[in-house]
Image (tube, rainbow over all chains, first blue to last red; front, side):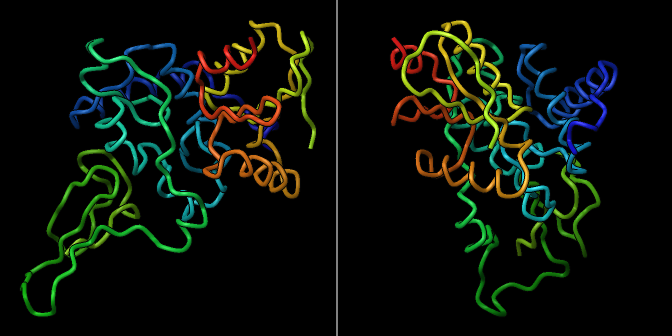
Length: 174
Length: 91
């Protein structure tokens, strides 16, 4: 039962806040400037990590199945598009520079994640389609589904060097 | 499905479908409390089995993307923490 899991401690919350802030800056992303708000979300991420074994978005209903929830492990597949369009990701953990600088107000962000039926019917793929033989590659190209990082190598990296997504969140792009 | 009831002024049936980890759900719940409205809420992420599927089916009727918070006031649903809309609907 979820209720039996220990609550994340303040130290754990603080440690993850610092880590996410550092990683965001390294990758050219920004955390929400409201520190208490960020702490609340990070607490939710830690609760979900205890509950499901992965940091599912605290503002979405997780399926308790890693493969069905790959798209909503934080940072989610929808973050970048929402930051561009609305100035923040769905839960508002990550914001645009304009929001960070107070130049853009934040409102409620509509859900970009397709409903479950659609996700099951059509697995998301943005892979380039090429006619056979039109391109010769010495190695395949892999794309990070979270941030779009591309790399040419035999297999995807263990961890995305830009957004820290795990290798199971890469797709073969070319 | 066990709803928690918050006592207050009756403004028809006010039901909040929320997640226990969601900040925007928390803000919505706090807004309803500060308005002194009577409402029922449920944390869908803490439900199991049939209770959870029943809750999801109910939410879907109002909000096909099953996102949170989904606030149902009478037959009208407000999705997300939309302070102005919520206040207007409960005025």
